[in-house]
Length: 263
Image (spheres, rainbow, N blue to C red):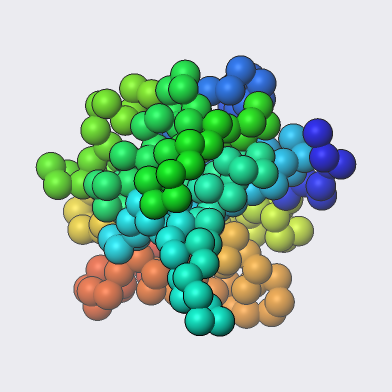
């Protein structure tokens, strides 16, 4: 194992650290599911540093193909040269390959994921004729937001059942306050106020929001307040305007913020 890296701040909610460590030791792939901004990516970064492993993060998107993960031939200096993709580099060198929001990628990516995510732990590279066997210190981790799933963009059972899974959700109030303080060094009173706002926004029933306030957005708000921005204006920029473009909804959310800060 490599020398320990500086640990990114992470506060556990349960036994997720132990599950991750056991998955790595037993060469099992891991799937993390949960809403946007609840710490999935931070958790993976924390665990990579904790285990002393290189981390190869891929932010998946609509145009991401299997070739983007595995690699392709590129033209350079008048000749064609093979260039490994992040998944191939992780398999060759060892480490954690993290596919963030994997359902956003094209369906052909499962072709290369499946043989790595079962007991074969292999990566076939058709264009070079190679068949790579993942070393013991390789781990495949994926995440996605089930709230975005639909008929066209979902994780197929044949993929999901190759992984052990962890479910992340919004933190309990005390833990979320602790996260804000640990991340930003903000005043405990401000942490309580921001968490109170988030909980009220998450419970609104008559406001149409695609996503509710995440812990990530609360961290942004706390950082703005800490450097001197008015709390209401910080919440407007970091929370309200990030959640909606609708003017009426904006006003409704701002009422919650203003009431919390006694405006």
